[in-house]
Length: 255
Image 1 (cartoon, rainbow, N blue to C red):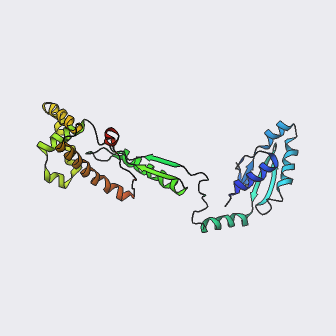
Image 2: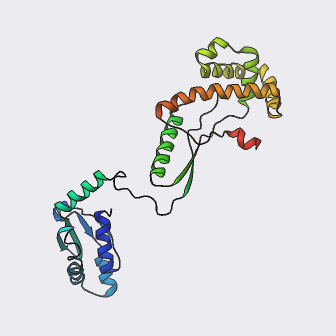
Image 3: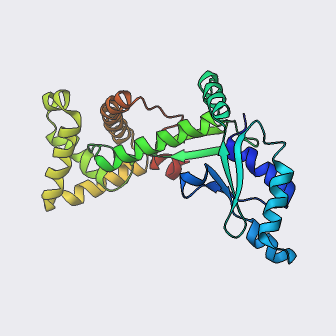
């Protein structure tokens, strides 16, 4: 279904060779306005008022079912007043259209959207929620337009903090606290180890073991990610957000 601006633009372009349809600045003069006549008249060396009238005479018959009135105003501006019956028909057509008048993309593309990206073992903050909502909105709109969308939740699941988390897990974790509030307990472990300088060398050693593929540290690391994702998924479920992929920093480092 063509919109009123598209219909008007097509008609003016055929008559003028160019078109620039905008909403009328003052609704008293019409609904839409074509303001490319003055520039074209100067290019042709013609009187803009005369050229505007020529265009009106040419397009009026084909727009008889669309426009109630077509007038020229000022130095070559053309104003269009839409027919009430046309507007009513457009509204009815949109209301009955499952896509509400939105066409699909003529040339669909593949679009990759990386969003949300919380950090493992830390609570999601407002920045993550904002990214989640904006990213999901973009994905929904682009899919509705017919594009192929691939979404990825790029987790912060690698780095120095995991040495601290692993030593904290091994020596200081509270299993009851993990059951009550996994993210809160993991954050406590990180802060505790980070606050004790004498533990930092051990934390670095645990990180090296993790990076070298130590089975015990790999298992702890995976448990920390799993506990974090369970908490993150509660938020995603409330928001109605899902991802095609959840590929954290570790995926790109280890692949």
